[in-house]
Image (cartoon, rainbow, N blue to C red; front, side, top):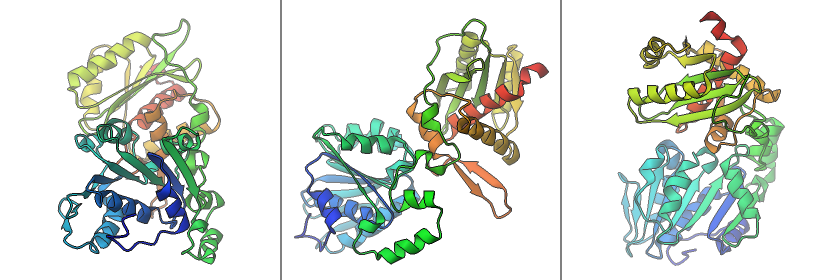
Length: 396
């Protein structure tokens, strides 16, 4: 590390990760292990060499976790320039560290990078890496550090698994909170005494708990369905539609009710409503579902009416907290009892595993995606499964 510029004293685990020659490093660790400080030191080390580094967090708010210590350590460097409005640190030699968020993965495109830290990337959409940051490292043969506490067996877990293989470029580590010599074990033991064991195992022991105790359990076990090009003879189908305008996605999900398998999914955004209707009509013609459960909220009402005027078997669904709770809990039960099967689709799996439940002060449960993530595939699937269970075509 750049000891000539900043006063840093890494603990043994941090030093081990820093000294590794792997190009891509994946660090799964418990709370208070020191992953943020390590990532900050690595960024400044790269900048000290006159190179360009990025710190990327799941959301703008979460990026403050990295920006705060970056400013503090940078203050030790003579003649450093801190651009607070841009969240950028410029060293006298031209090297830089910029803090960004992955709320919109497309906003991460364009820059060539020497190094990137993906902070809490288990809570980040995989597209941020695959479609934006990995290509940005290509021309400079840049390096990456993935740091996170785990959240089920999502794409961060897959990156960690890759680092366990002897392939030269990737290396991964797992450190518990107990591995930080500067945090007393008694403090961690005290936390353990007041937490569910499953939560403690994930947050402090950095264990990859299947589905992280979230809303949907058994997601990976259910991810075995094969896509279909057209309807199978003698099979009945159901469709669910979650509409969106620009930032979110419209998602069409078709379930083969004979096998309870998701047989087709179409996900798109930033296209006009006429094209959206055409794509839905195309899926309908392929499978001729008994009914189409279409969300009525916002623009869903007029679009659903347009489909009805085309003669399609549409039944509108009004989403409220109560009705959403009903269909989400039904879908959760379907996963737990292995009634439904889904494709091995990274986006769908990621949304399902990240989906959260929060109990409000009134005692009511609220279901949603984490900040900066989408739940369109979850909702479309939940609507389709609702149709399978309630046979709405009998009312059409």
